[in-house]
Length: 117
Image 1 (cartoon, rainbow, N blue to C red):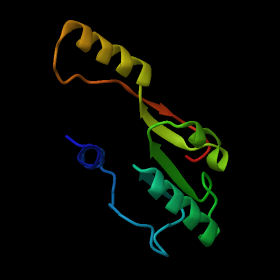
Image 2 (image 1 turned 90 degrees about the horizontal axis):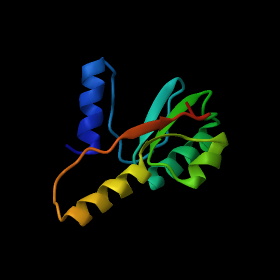
Image 3 (image 1 turned 120 degrees about the horizontal axis):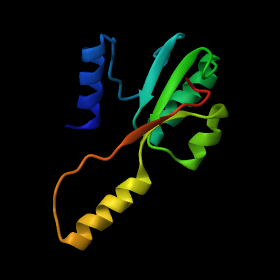
């Protein structure tokens, strides 16, 4: 299952409304809404849209981004992220390589909450 499908399933299971957008058109961003962002390009578009529409991240709108990067620690006072445990991912990959195995394994994800939510 891909990321988008997993998010849709989560929203349905928990009764959250959702929309999927592929660009940030003028008027898309609404106060009191949260946006889950899967790409750096889309994150930049949302941040530019907030500046254009005079919306404050973490106050007027919420943002959750996918995958931790050092830049997300400092953008707009800190962007909340859902990210895989990269250290565990590396350990698991090394173990599979050393054992000569090929298999699908689940890697833990964590939420790092910052000022954007």
